[in-house]
Length: 209
Image (cartoon, rainbow, N blue to C red; front, side, top):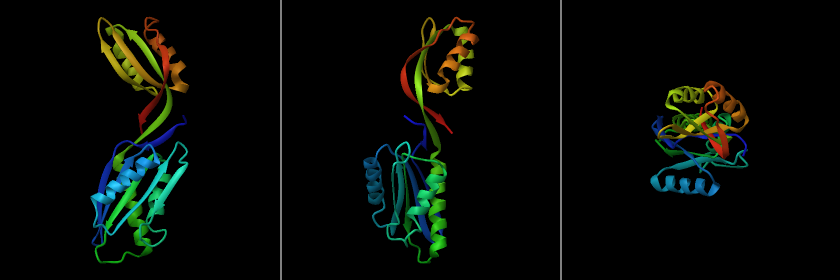
């Protein structure tokens, strides 16, 4: 896999601009089929909305990209939403902005600003994660050295994904592939050679950003 950035969770925000109500939603999605399914759900959620505009990007390099103005003047809705996703470097993401017309025309510039700000609000509320190619590292240590290992992982491109407390502490750690050797070396040094981590396979590392 290649590193990529996507939203952390689903999120929804709202704005009222000149009496028009804009409901913005962001979704992490893995496939185009999932994006279209979530889009269909949004349309069912707001069946009387004036417009349901959207953009999505799928793939580690955003190989699949689609957007729609959904009846708004060309270039004033879907593309501004897409440009926000591009500017934030997000992929595997769907963003919808649903509009209830309030009776006051916003003009092309006003629409672009409204849809851009809606997409920015929702994507900010959703947060973001970096997904990196990683390896699974397993290790055992005594209780006196657990705190040092935990502190070391917090400062590295690594995440403790499982901990079992028996007569000793057994750890499963997801680490960035490119940093694995350095992390293993640091653990050995920090524990005076008493903890000997081993690579147990490949995985995907998720780091909040």
